[in-house]
Image (tube, rainbow, N blue to C red; front, side):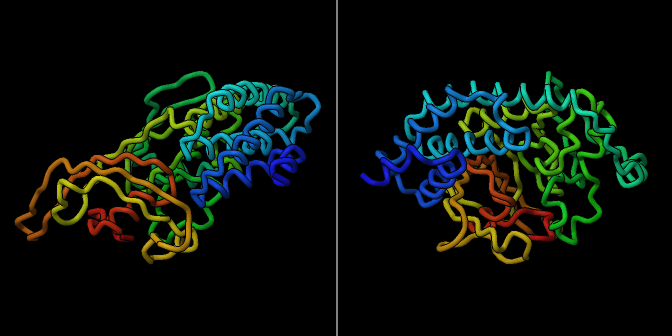
Length: 316
């Protein structure tokens, strides 16, 4: 009861931290989470972006999204929270875009040498599959890196990869796509694809576009599906993997799953077909995969956990 009364004094980040902790521990304390939701909705509905410092606007939006994700992840009723959050994010996104347009900053520079010299000779370049106001869908070929704030921790086997952000910075003007130059928010990339993988990547190029996409992702309105080939013959009954991804092992060559540590992660599998390479006497399975969470290297780690490590993958 005391905790429920104290919730009304929490700031946005404290609410988000509490909700995240409950979600990651899979604790569905409905009275406390309902109090967090009520407090968050009140903050969102009374939000005046003009009274918030520019440096606080983005952390505030991420706090709102953290609260929303926690309720969606635990499959608790959150329709009102989602609607309030969407309206608040719209205000924050518009204000950040307005402030960015008024900024007197000089145009950021890109490392043209790193991004172009090697890849201009490569036919396998990225391309835009869809361009909308404030957001794009880009097709990433293999050997390109969806880079961001964690680029310094890349594995040695990935150092040859060209940064996808540099290509996009050359293709799109800074004046109308400012988020692409912000490494602190992963250049607007909504999710990652590992360097050896190819496929579609969502990217917000303005703050309004990025926050709109994040709202959809954190309420599970966006579904991500993958096709992956793994070693061995998997049984058709293999449907799901629930194993924590331990962030302490992310940059090592160890197994990334842990029973006692890490963040909860869920992956759904469907075995499409089996194949045999007679030349090398190896068996393979082709999987259609959906993910509930988006932990780093989740698919590769869960396939390894299930006993079918991804094919043509020196790391796993």
